[in-house]
Image (cartoon, rainbow, N blue to C red; front, side, top):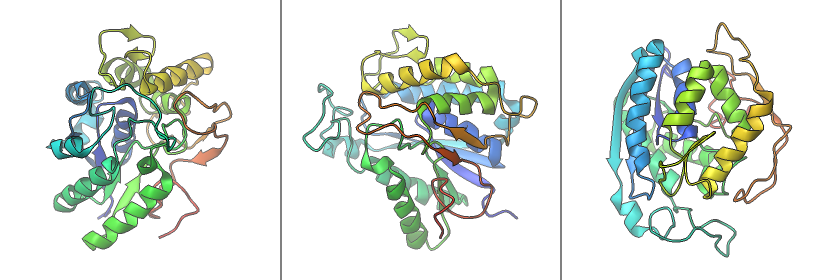
Length: 289
């Protein structure tokens, strides 16, 4: 029996986590999902995630058979102790430390800890998250080193091997759209474009070419820029007749700094699907247990 046959996906209802859910459904025999209600301003994403799960089951029956239980945990306490534009009605701006004030300290650390506890009970050894260190706002708990460290901590604390997979870690948003197309073609691209939610302000009153949002916040800026870079060279799926098991490499030759990125563009090529038992945690083939 494959000890890593099942996975638990941290699923918010946004573009990145939905792409990662599709990635997991493409690879694992059983996939469960977990979401978190922490008082986020854009909690409309929690409604979107329900619709996305239903749409995935309807439009991808093979994936639907693998899709298991879904849970949303109440983390109101996280919102209560946070001082963030993501959990309170404040203008979005940069703090003196260079991070945007949308940063919720400890959020992903807590998410993975609770996901690890649930996965332990459910007999799942792989946790999947949509964290990214390329097109991102600089959050330290999204960084590769942080998640490698947490993978080790969870494995030691639970006395069982835990693998944290972050398929998008080194992909920019344009490459994320391309990955979506390769996983599920135009059907999945349209599902993510129309049904997922990224806007920090929770705006679903305006539909743009890239999806719903205010078209002004950092999340909308990244999603829009990625969509626009993806459009001119819309690649056909690497294996059009076999969209699964086909993500191999993406060359991020057009990565550029974006607003709220808090960093420079990355130009690199990275293998995102090693299909090995090495618990690299974030698709880094050079990091070993």
